[in-house]
Length: 213
Image (cartoon, rainbow, N blue to C red; front, top):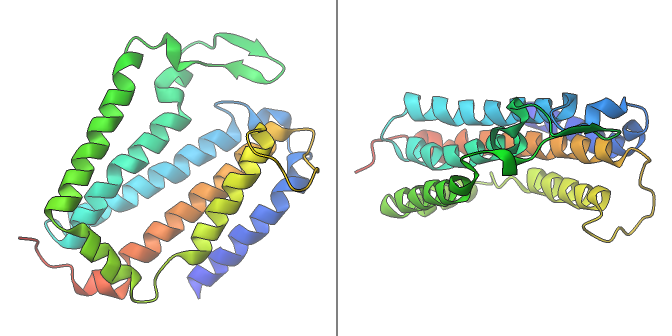
């Protein structure tokens, strides 16, 4: 019941993104603005939930799956923070808000190799402990997050439209496209959090929270 309520709320929020985009302050869509900071909070909550699963069921298959997911949340948080550039003085302040760039970071050359290393280690852990079987077991019990996946894809499409990266079927973009982009990303990240919640708390994973060999 609780999951269905969240489904309804997220769907309503997604549908409301277009009218809200022209009614919210333009500053909310700025980089390091209200909506982007809200996204970071949601992503941190996702990482915190995965970390809690790791600590609670350490060495179980569920904990190992959460451990593999943790780097993904970390990368998403870092990306939303421009890899740390938002903590520096803006390069410029324009009508679109403060401008930050990761190109100014002294450690910029190491970012993508480090991300690749983290994901590679996560992949090795998943392969070593056959977490694909664990995930399939969870999803086979009617806990596939189809609705969350739909919300994420729909939000990504609208975000692409707002950024001008994809061709929109409906020419109805708001004047404050940056606000629309950030709004739908809030929906996407919230749906991702809910998808993780459903998978980790599925009966299959809870019943098999036993130590991994």
